[in-house]
Image (cartoon, rainbow, N blue to C red; front, side, top):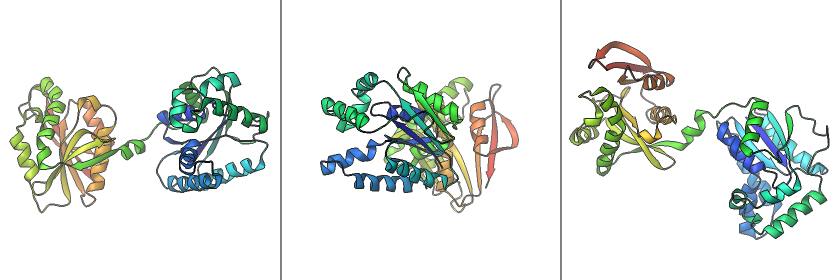
Length: 350
């Protein structure tokens, strides 16, 4: 697993740049104050030992995830050997997994940093900075007591860059970092962590029906097929839900119901073959990769299934691409429905 260490003086923009970098890569942000603020709140004072222990727990757990890596922010006193040793200890843990450690040092004029110390984003995430007089005085003390900006050539690491972001927006700096180190785009891992399947209760079937009509109506208006789920009766949905070996699940992302999926087989005794019929995402959530995540969750939910089957519209290239991305292959003959629409079958053998 990889690690990006964002280094710099107080209010230089480490957290904000990290937030922007997290949006465009498969790295998660662990900024310095995520552990400092709870300790200050609970203990009423800074306790370095407790902060360090909490950080260690986060590092240990995160190294077991499937993310590409972590973004860690740190105010590094270059004249303190203990800080060099601390960063080395963290870097060693990530490199031991075969990962790469990248070092990004941000520098900016003091006047700019004093203004950044007042920003809404900083004060929202760092309660200890909200007394502006105290936080500004502490920031000046830190940079006069310690050497928080590296000397030219002092940082020996191969994957190191220093960026003067005095006049640069955070998203611009994030893109510079991504391009400099050729960091991968955000992967499906983050989305899979946000999506889950929740079984639909009987009293929730009317809501499911409304969502299905909403989701399939654009296709019905395009093809006018009489078998469209957009015009399926509520009684038919209720009957499908009552079958012993079929279940409806809401597709839930970040706590919101964004679609649904029906899984199973008409034969109650069948355990190794399952249909996906139907699956739909509400229109306002299209093109976010949610369908892919939902299908992966279905695979996890039914590990005993060896063959998955589904039917889709040949003319809907986006849907075909989704299923092929999931590993499905076309089987059987094309089934024309009308002059505009043809149905095709897909299967996945596990």
